[in-house]
Length: 352
View (cartoon, rainbow, N blue to C red):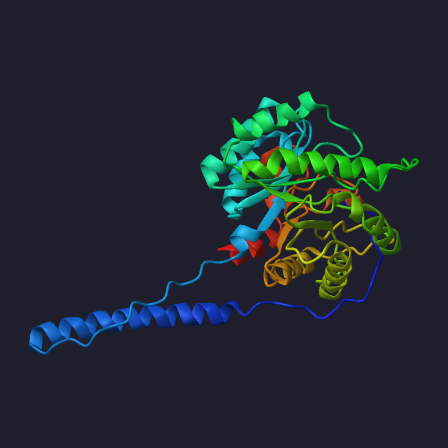
């Protein structure tokens, strides 16, 4: 979940030249058509046709494999509780990856949601494993592995260590040994899941305060060395696209953990119209403008991004930050009242 962010000036925007890709695709199509016409003309005139080259395959959109959206299928009393409605909109969005979590207590409804997303819409899952600072027993690890190799076999692409183990949500004292217990969890995650062919990412540190984040990363790094195949981080852009912040994190994590691919498992923009706090709020139109550029800023590096999040929460006041990160407006729990924000259409078009 997002943490407090601080306002910053908007950095230059960034975008891949997708028009060039479309132009090349049209040129390939034209070349195929011309080759066919040449062959047909040759057969009617008796002339020997000139050899033709097989056109190179047109590359698919890499964002379809590297862009996910955050969902909460276990939140049965929230907007995510109507699984039929949520799955229908996910299918309409066209996303092929979603992120959520798995614990030993994962219920049949969440397993069914994950299965249906894959079977009905081809959506694979990226899962955070366990709850922060809650050590799993051997039997609980066995339960998780049984789900991943049983009903969810082939549907889970990535799994991650604890979510924000360096932060106590709502206040409180962080245990002095948080880095050691986080490292122990990561070691078991790597030992259990890497042999299954599932990609294993690092724990995802709270980054609301960059100085604290950097110090916590330095403290954690020795405990997780050699126990992941890609880095996971949380990085909210704080208004704009935030390419300079991605560059900063790239350098910081490279120095601490070495050269690895990255997945940003949380990033997004909130659109609460009556918000009065210190974080950077954007309009719905700005959210629609920034999200495709944010996807490109990661995908251009070969990195993944999970957008936070899919659905809003009902918020009559329009002032609650946490209720307005979604791509879908949800004034109530009833799906008949839901409507897509401009960002929904922008992301849908970008992933097509």
